[in-house]
Figure 1: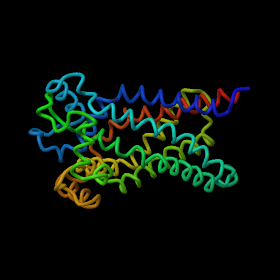
Figure 2: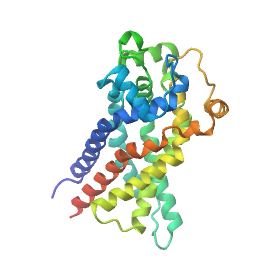
Figure 3: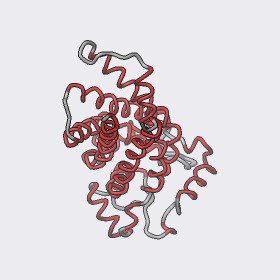
Figure 4: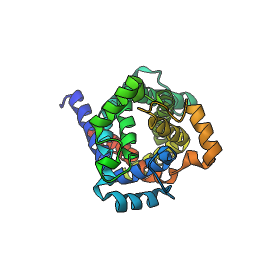
Length: 292
């Protein structure tokens, strides 16, 4: 019989590989969406982008093909603790939290699943946030040549932020992000574990559809958090930031750009959501195979 710890590592590693591959494939779309969300704070942007596709097309013409993946390295580095801690921690807390029968006690069952997912997200958050902030900074740093851009790479970006703002600059928007991540991960894991008890998804295709629906709904609930978070991340390293805090940022966005600015680029979340759905499906599939 194989070692349970080895099986768990194999399952999580498989989920990590699946999510990392999808991050590479969806990177241009992710960069376009980030720029759409933060273009109000980009100083050297002369003409605003009309949409995510318009943004990607212009980036391709103005910067070149490979620049569509700018910031992806930081995203992959953030993915290491995100995946390797999230799934094991989620399962750990599911075991130690009170157990409820989903038929006899559906509300308690749902709340416990949400709690285990939320705690898993919170446990990894402190390790991933600086990488996420650097990813956003690099993605929204426009210019084909290095002299036109603010940063030359991850090290330069990290050093600039640390010199100007210290550790605090690397966690700009941390509290709002914490709330958003907890809500997203709680919904992401909790809803999936709860719904699969009521919707008998047996085939890999059915599980993927269920996971995709959960990922999309979680994105809809938390998207305004994500938009404001990215605006605040752009303030990292600035001596005179545009926004005092999350409330000030959201208020100014609504006043100047309308409520729709909080959801700018949301429909392309469906494309990026494949990454989350794929991770859930692979994780579930390998867990099922190991039980055979």
